[in-house]
Length: 175
Image 1: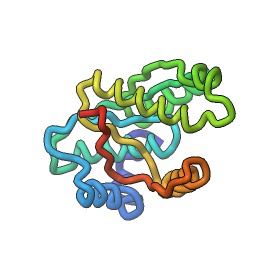
Image 2: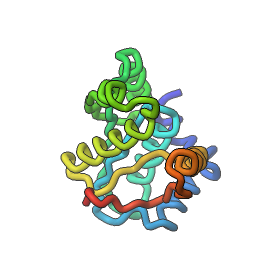
Image 3: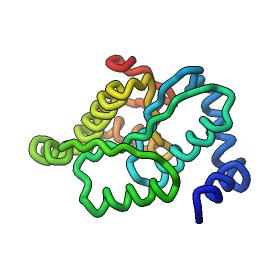
Image 4: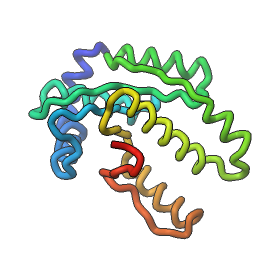
């Protein structure tokens, strides 16, 4: 499957299931404003790569002029995973920039029995820093309903609170 076919499928075959809800969420939650420079954060999985393609289509066909950069924060992936990610992004026509970090090593060394929370916080902080360096005023993450449910359960079991993931979050330390 080539890039043109993927792009055509997003706005035809998958319009009802993917593209339309994506556009509706942008409008309903006022996620994008004219002149935004958005860092689309890609993990390499199907969710973030799909979001990147949707964002490309939005940039191409949307009513609002925006700039988009595609960032991959490598927290310590294996070389094999980095190569696979680069190949998938290339096949999909997504111009990624990979920024390396040592988060996996740091977390392994100091996190103890519960590394997930620390790793997630460090990755988010690093993404904010990278986006800021790139002149971005927003970041886009590919969260879905399973992620939201998982966040609620983790907060209940490990944090003793009932917090959910919001579609739009204003970070204290980000523009």
